[in-house]
Length: 319
Image 1 (cartoon, one colour):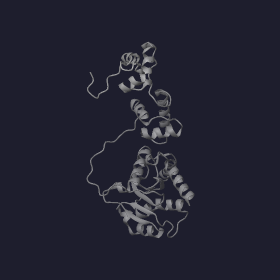
Image 2 (image 1 turned 180 degrees about the vertical axis):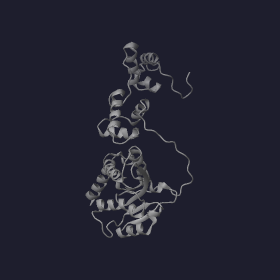
Image 3 (image 1 turned 90 degrees about the vertical axis):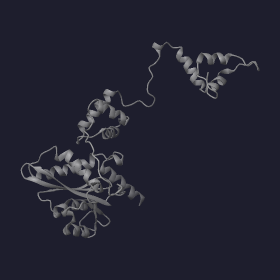
Image 4 (image 1 turned 90 degrees about the horizontal axis):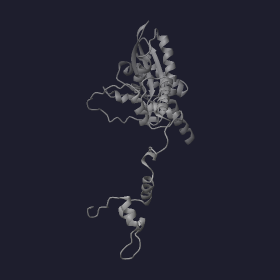
C-alpha cells in the first residue's frame, strides 16, 4: 500500500480495469483520463505500454539513443579522425582540436564521442603530468580584446648540426595568438631581440617610423636583452610601451610562453637543421602555417588569422 499522499505504482491491467469500472455514486465509468491523473502518468504513456506489450519481445524494435543521428558508424568516424590527424601539419593535437577540424569539414558529432573513440583506438595526444606551484603574484586575468594592443616577446634556444647553439626570438599578439615575428641568430643579444618586433611593425603598422606603433604594449620578461637601454629606447622610438611581466611568473606572458612550447613541439624538437639560414627558412614557413592552420580553443577553434580578420572587419564595419 502506498503511503498517505504518495501515488500508487502504475499497473496497466489494473488501470484499464479501473477505467472500465463505474463509480458507485454516479454510476458513470471512471475513464482512462481520470485514472491516469490519479497514477500521475500521461495517457499517451499508458497507450504506448499497451501497444508495446501486444508485440512479442523478439519482434520489438531495438531502442536507440534519442537525438540527431551522428556522423556515421564508429568505424567511419575513426577513419575520419585518422585522416584529420594525418592531414594536419601539427603533431600531438588532442580530441578537442580534432573535433573542431571535423566540424570545419562538415562532419558534426559530439566532442565526447570523438574523445571516446580516440581513447579506444589509442589516438589521444600524450599528456604531461602537472606539479604544484607556489602562490601566484597575479590573478591570471591579463586579457586583451583588440589586436595590436599588446604583443608578447620571448626567446628560446636550439642547436643546429653545423653551427651549434642558436637563439630563436618570437613575438605573439596577446589577443589573436598570432605570430607577428620570428627571428633566429647565433647571438642572443638586445639587437636580435628587437627583430621580431620590427617584423610585426612593418607588417601590421605599414612602415617603420617614430611613434608608428603608439598604443601598443610589449610584454617581456626581465632578461638582460629586454631590459637593456638599446631595447627600451627603440620601444620608445616606435611609440611602444614596455610592460615587464612579474618575476618568476611566466603566466604573465603566457601567450608567448605557449607559442614557444608549440614551436618546440611542432618544429624545433622534431626536425634538425644544419645552418641558421636553413632554420630561418623553416621558421618563416612555420609562421605562415601556424597563423593559417593552428586552431585556438579560446577563440572558438578559429585560426589566429581568422581571429584577426574577424576582429579587424568588425571594427571597420562599426566605423
